[in-house]
Image 1 (cartoon, rainbow, N blue to C red):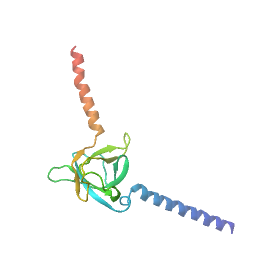
Image 2: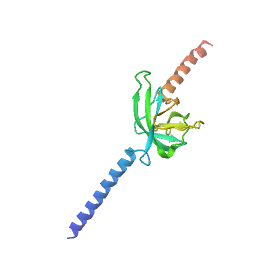
Image 3: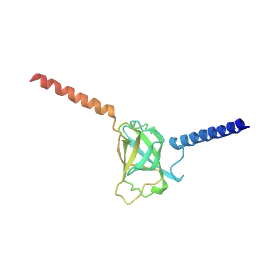
Image 4: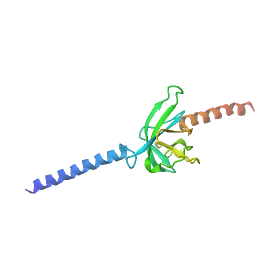
Amino acid sequence: MQSRALEILVGFFVCLGVSAVFILTFRVASLTSVEGGKGYTVTATFQNIGGLKTGGAVKLAGVKIGRIKSITIDPNSFEAVATMEISDVYNTIPEDSGGKILTAGLLGEQYVSIDVGGAEESLKEGSKLKFTQSALVLENIIGQFLTSQASKSPEKDAK
């Protein structure tokens, strides 16, 4: 009788653990829409998005205000177009605001940061961010540094 009660207790804790992992997975994966459930979409065009992914964060002053809904290629300019869903709570962001792709930490995930403009009109459904700054790709910076160091070396040898 005591072993039967112990088996039921262990089974209960196993079910509890599985459900906790299940809930945690959905919270981390950000499968829900923007906070509040309602939002408006804004697009931004970037020359290089680096490691930006669908579902990534959209932040304003370090606060998450939305997420990346989709990333596509513009067939005319061959640039990346990021469609962002921003929560309706943040419906007073000036229309001339810009966006740049930043990295959380040295090698963390990338996100879009909104730089606030000064226009009186606000972003609305279907607006496009006019001013954008592409991702800073670490490999390109290292390559430029190595190239500049290699071009300096022959000058030292010539002296």
